Image (cartoon, rainbow, N blue to C red; front, top):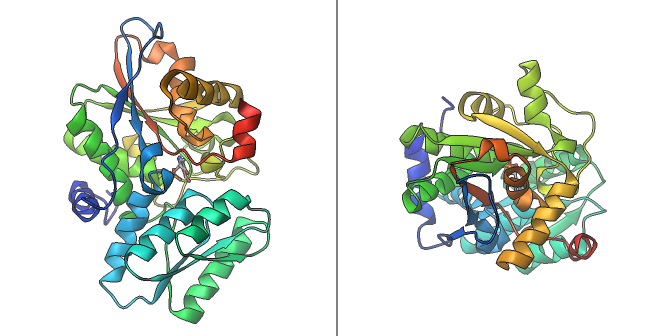
Length: 317
Ligand SMILES: Cc1ncc(COP(=O)(O)O)c(C=O)c1O
């Protein structure tokens, strides 16, 4: 049990988020010959405020901080978390600084700026950005908002688990993508607290299989490199807090290659008119490429985000 993460903290996060973010739909799928008797539905967080689930954790964290005397917030993510922090900070009238690599795509920088954040460029490695963000936090008295290894962030992400079980109680398997592991830690904690019979399956890119490798070796492994089109789950390691939760609460791990992810992006777009980014489509890729796990089962695949870079979308199409 991780301190600060429980069914109660997830329910409290749900109260803070109610009326602020969308209750995203669970969309039915059609027209495919799925494995015998399988049914697939999609939790469409690509429709969420800021285009991904990340607003849930960022908003919950900043809402708690805001009760103190924080002046502003800072984070080191150029991706969906940076956008979410920018949006939530603006909601509370707080300043936000997002530290991004010199190589960050313009589309992501513009999104964070459009939500009112100040963007600061720093180096190319995540270590450089993290150090810079921590320095800014110290100098200006801002709070650092971690992307995943934080109980309030995980509690916010866990609200997805509650919504899935409430909106489709017949569900038997839930597929969740894994980057640093905050998303699946929150969801698995929620689901296992109320419906331990539901299987929670984590999905990783084959080129960034840190959870799978860690499970195999019975310790938290830090990969020496990653290689995948799915930038949101392209993470070298699970967090110090998320690793034990993944080990305890996630029933099974599947990996998917980039070809399967791209196929899933196309299928979602053309068959269901849903635009998912590669990290968001990985769960659908796992469903499609592992039929033995799903025959006769009712499954939800989490479409965790839709913020796809225009150049990546062009190359996938
Ligand atoms: C679209 C998308 N899906 C999944 C993830 C993975 O979330 P976590 O790092 O909490 O495991 C991320 C993280 O940035 C993301 O942006």
